[in-house]
Image (cartoon, helix red, strand yellow):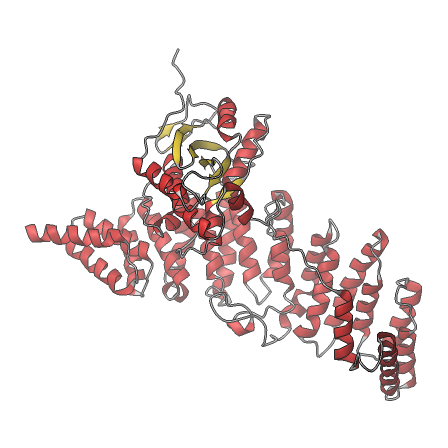
Amino acid sequence: MQQRPQPHRAVWPVALGVALRKACAWDWLGSPQGRHAMRFVVLDVETSGLSPVRDRVVWLALAVVEDGTVLERWSTLVHPGTETTRLVNGISLAGMPTFTEIADALCGHLNDTVLVAHNARFDVAFLRQEFARSERTMPDIPVVCTMQLVRRLEVEVASLSLVDSCAAFGIAHLRRHRADEDVEATAQLLAQLLPLAAQRGWRTSEDLVTALLPTRSDGELSIEITFDLDQLLMDWLVREAGWRPEDEDVEAALQRWRTQQRAQREARYALMTPAHSNAHRLWDAVDSRDWRPAAWEPVLEALAASGCDEVADAWKDWTCRCDDSRAGRRRRRELSRQAAAVALEEPDLTRKRLDGFISDLTLAVGESATGCDELIGWYVAHVDRLAALPACGSCGEEGEFSRGCLGRLPCATADLADELSWKIDDYEISDKIFHRRMDVLTPALMRDPNPMPLVRLAKERVRRYVDAGEDATAAEFWRPVQAHLVAVGSLATALREVARAYGHLMYGKRYQMVIDLLAPLSQDAALQSTEDGFWLLDQLARSYERLEQFHQAFSIWRLAIDAGSTEQNTFERLSLALERRGDWPGALAVIDQALARVDQPLESLTKRAARCQKRLAKR
């Protein structure tokens, strides 16, 4: 009987242990000996896909580090437990242990440690799911994410990926997406981050874990806000009523303000018709806590009959009067929808006026389990009127994170589509519910002038289809969305989200799918004039290269460079391909262009230039 292969130990450079010991020797703990023994387990998993629910761990590696010393390294391929034999880096998983068989050994490594991983949320999600399938519970241990630590330490990196984070410290990480190599790179990155953390006062593992808080399990920031109500009231009296504390007390100031308000109302009513003023007096007479229909329906009828332009405000006021009982919350959802609908009927409606109604609407429906579907229904019914509203001209900001009118992008005021996209784009929503909502919402989003919600949700739908192995369905859905963006001239506006959609396809190695969908866009001006466009052209060329269609890959890389690309990977891949073909003058010409355009070119480019020059000199 063939003996099952055992988990193997990876052989990694001695420099890793040296770097860790240096990092942990002084600044990290504040003394040469240290105050506490630090035990980290640096871990990485490689998986068959991106969904913890549908996909499986196929490779797991870890390194146990205590006070800067690597005590143990452990790496094993993992059979996914399906009948299909898989390959990982060309190695068959047939005969490899299942996760259930290695779970006890893994628990032994994880107990009483701090788990370290890059993008730890991904690794932990898969581990928990695998432990659950094995009918075990993952050890409850603190987790440190080096990706989040890079962000918190404000390290200057091209991106938060493991490769770019390592590159910021001169750490070479060439064999990426191998569990053992990723663990080595993460451990070296940790060694560089620990002294920086110590400078912030994070000198123990407990300090480090706490520094990455506060977050709840859903990833949302938790903030505690306190305020002084008495001080707020006094500030308001000074501002609105002209209160002078040395001349009168608070009660007297409030009474004076009420008298002023009544006088102003009466002066306003004197300019109205009798029917109009009587409707307003009826409105004023409603008790502040009364939200009964019997009290409000006569008010709304009287205001509408008098031709008042504040009917929507009366609906909104009724909404605010509802209490927090179950019936009150249900009534508030109904009234908020009606108030916003009435506001949409105003002939001179502006986005700034509508914004308050949309905010009330999204808050009210958010209280209900069916609220998202109610909001979708309201949006679909009124999208054409919403789309016709002129931009406010003053929202958003200009700069690196440009948005809204000031960023020369679609108006962000009263943008219900944007609110919906964030509510629906949630990993916890099942595929069935997500796709049902998208079937209803997509046609309406295509009529909205802001393309970002459409692309954001379309990207998520493509991700879900690809993770489920439904590539044809993903392409069938994405193609008309992409064509719509081109037809309405919104491709350039939404290019960053489009790039993220293709990034997911590249990660999933859907190279032919990338070619089929992206090749028709290669001549679009948006792809030949922006950073995101050049990145997309590089991904298209890499897809051709992966499928050994080298002529097409060279053509796309050359197209991007001639258009002014500064994407380093484009110069790297094209010069490497030319070098391999023996076209050393061509490789040197590409490298010269890179050196002229890129502020900090990759070291590999300068080394390649030296090799090519040496070979030309030998001719």
